[in-house]
Length: 378
Image (cartoon, rainbow, N blue to C red; front, side):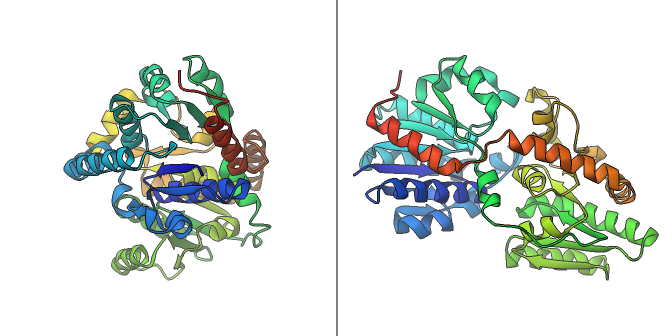
């Protein structure tokens, strides 16, 4: 029976890890799992998966450095656990800061099983020089964007395009509720640090827009009750009667809103899949921003814009991420139905390029082939 050690470090990775595990079990119930993940993976594998995503899901160089010792201890413990359990394969899902170091350390330590990366780290954006090294560590790269296959294989890394899992996942949810005229969505992210940076900006933008258009409604969805409590505290300092705070309804809200503002990351692609006209917002610690600017090699931060080859979604980054700028973009989209319709047409075109089948099932089949020996580490 094949045994797989899976490592994810964020809530989105936990969802993808669980989807992949279910697809592998659909192929054969004999698959056994352990690793580092979150509650969804733990619900499938039990105590063999450690739930660490709440602590592990930090963003930014400065923020990671603050937890350097904690991550070092986790790395050592994970290496020891893998070397002891000797799984047939280690599957690394996104989370490159930890997972690429883990892959390198496993190979250096003589790990003889397969090492498979699912959901490519975006090294094509910030560190292409790492790709030749990755080709030495990995047996298989499973990418979710079609342009990645040619890039990685150009460096000798066997790569397959599995399709984007979010397209299939959201497609299975069925039709959503109708859009509510005049409902503006605030999506400041799923981490406390993101919310601390972005929610005050969005609150002020909502105040500015509400003063001009008092009939507008505003809503925000927190991923958990503790984060909803944080938002309520911020709202109490700057009350806005037209704003409601929901919990656990982010995708439903993306379907309901007329326009929105979405924190940079996976959520911006989800907003596109769900057809929400929006602007992208991004604000981090100043040192983190400038360090990122020095290494990022792509013209846009948002994946929708990268796939389109131009700025389809307005990007409001760091110093440009102001309440006035967000309010102005909301006002433009609300005032121009044609602008919203054009955005939604672009979203459909881009999403259609990301595959329409079950990406988890395809990824599971490719992993099974790799373990059967049809692909091998070079």
